[in-house]
Length: 242
Image (cartoon, rainbow, N blue to C red; front, side, top):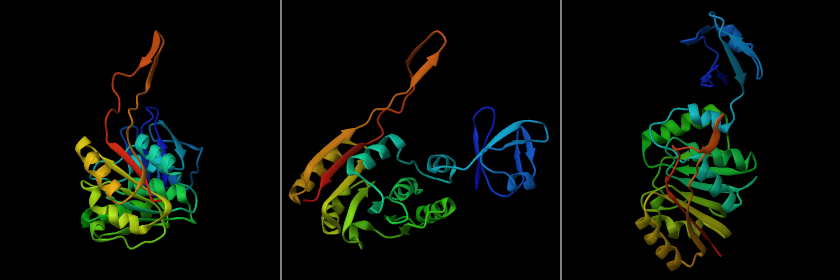
C-alpha cells in the first residue's frame, strides 16, 4: 500500500493497480515498482509524490461509516495514561477502528489491543481496516463489553460509549493496580454520572478535560488564529485503579 500526493497536496491510497484521477492515469507497473520518495507522472505529465503511509495517513484515507476520535483527543489519552510499548489495552466502541489503530501503533508488537464493538457491520469494517494497515497486535471482538471484559491485568481501558458507567465495574476487575480507565463522551451530563460511579467503585485521580484545538493562519499580511477550528468534540475523563 502506498500514498500518492498530488500538487494540491491531496492524498490517495493506492494498491498495485492502475491509478486514475482528474490529472490523468499512472500505469500499474509504475506503481508496483515505486518506492517512498519517488515521483510518478501521469500520462498528462502531472506529478505525484510517493510515500509509505503512516498511521495518520492511513486513518485519513481508510473506509469508515462513522465519526472517529480526532488526533487532538487521542494524543491526550495516550499521554495522560502513559501508554507505551508493551502495554495491554482494552478499547470499546471500535467504530471504524481508528483509535484502536493509534493504540496498536504505540504499544507495538510486544503489546496488545483488544477492541470491543457491538455492531457487526462496524466490526467488519474495523477488521478490514486493521488488516489493511498490517498490525497483528489488534483483535476485534464483536461483543457487548457491558456484559464483561475477558482480559485481565490490563494497563488501560478506553471507552467511547454512550453509557461508559455501565462498564466501570468490569474495568475495575480487568485493570491492574495503577492502570487507567479513560472515556470519551460528548455531553456534560455523561461525565457527571460517570464521575459519581467512578467514586462509588473507589477509583482515584478522577479528572475530566476538554481539548480546544486551533491552528494558525499564516499569510503575507500577517498571522492570526484560523476562524475555522476543531472546537468541542468530546469530554475526556480519566481515573486510576489504586
